[in-house]
Length: 266
Image (cartoon, rainbow, N blue to C red):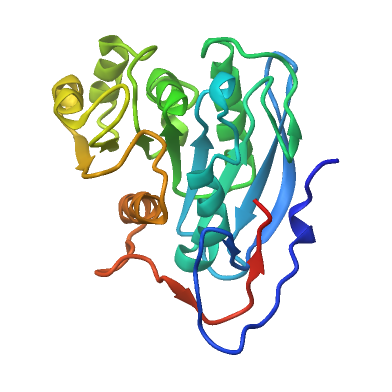
C-alpha cells in the first residue's frame, strides 16, 4: 500500500513541543510522479510551506539503493518534516530507478549511476515546471555522485543554483567532474563526517581543492550516515544557511514548535 502524506494526523499540543526525530510539522504535502526521458516513472513526494514565500527548493538525491538508501533516508525525511515550516523551504524527495520505499517503487532498475542521470534531469525538470524557485541539489553518499556528475552539465546546470553534498565517497565522480563544477562557478558545500567510512575531512579537502569555490566542512564526531539528532540537525542547519538568505539563525533552526504537530511512524 502506497503511503499518502495527507494521512498524517495533526493535533494541537497544550504548549510549545520539542521537535523530535518523528515530529512532523505542517506543510502542503503531495505524492508525485516524475517521468524520465527513457520512459520510467519515478515516485516521490513534494513538501511545500503551508503559506508564504518559498525561500529555496531542495532536490534531494538519496544514498545507494543497493545498500538501503531511498527517499526516506532519515536526513531527507527530517528535512521534509521540518524545513517547509521552519525555513520556508520546499523539499522534493524521490526514489531513483528501481528503488522502493513506503511511497512505492520507481520503475526500472539500478544502473550504477549511469541511467540515473535521467532521474536527476527528471527531478529538476519537475521543479522547473512547478516554478519552484532557488533550486539546489542535495546529494547524500551515492546521491553526491549524481550531483557531481550531472549537476554542472546541461540541462541541469542552468536550472540549479548549486549543490550541498553529504558524505561524498568520490567513487564514481572523478576529478573531471570536479573540474566541471569549478568551471561552472556554482556554489558547492561539502559536509564530511570526521569518522566517514569512505572519505574523511583532510582527504576531502585535498580532493575538492580542484573546486576553488567549494566549502568543505568537517563535522566532528559524525559518521557516514549522520545517525543521531545532533548530527541530523547540524546538516539541516548547514543546508538552510547555504540555500536561504535568512539562514538558520545564530542558534540554528528552532528546536521547539508552538503549533499543530503530527508524529511519524518511521
